[in-house]
Image 1 (tube, one colour):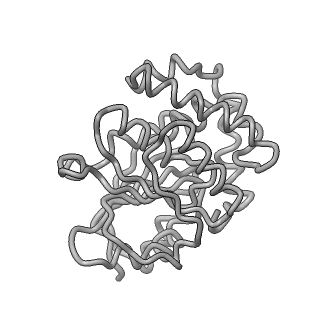
Image 2 (cartoon, one colour):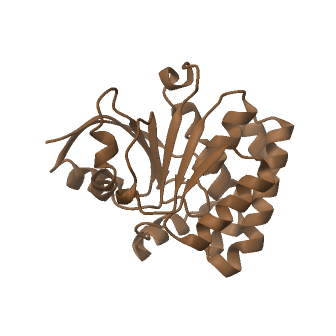
Amino acid sequence: MEPPPSSGARAERGDLAARDPAPLTAEEFAAQTNVSRETLARLKIYAALLVKFQKALNLVGPGTLADPWRRHFLDSAQLFPLIPSSALDGGEGAIILDLGSGAGFPGVVLALMGAGAGTTFRVHLVEADSRKATFLKEVARRTDCPVTIHNLRLEAMEPFPVDVICARAFAPIARILGVSGHFLALPGPRPVLLLLKGRRATEELTAARKGWKMHVEITPSITGADAMVLRLRDIARE
């Protein structure tokens, strides 16, 4: 993953499970997200692979596997309705770039939800760690998930037009904007950033605004009291 989240970033998301009243079941996840039985079946395969490879690859915080359907799947799925409608209306569907994909959250979840809803998302997963990229390939194969996996650092990628850039437990906002700057600078409509963040989000936004201008929308996360979803648009360097 590029770069790995700091211990503080992991802690700020890792301590949420202690406040959850009870683990969310797969069926409760499906009821909240309205995914089809076929999509839920694919997500269950994904969940089983996550558990199987966790010990060898350290894909997620170990404590979060006590409640994976809330901490990872629902956390990722809450981005689905925030994808711009203009990106969904095109003939080829939204192009989504998932930074530092790691275990595949949120990119794989969004790709499976999009496929299940009959929307052709083109989701690109960027993961520099070769072993985690191999895990993502196995998830894509076993779930028939429509994703493209890039096993390299984001800075080394040739930029292409995207509608959405998303990230979860990846890096501070200023760092995210910096490493994705070559995508943000392309001609045409600017991508929207969807970021899953913890309690340091306001502090990170203050730091990011020293070098960038943007319109910010903040939505409370549905998976934890101290977590939030940031939707950044009209992004440009100061």
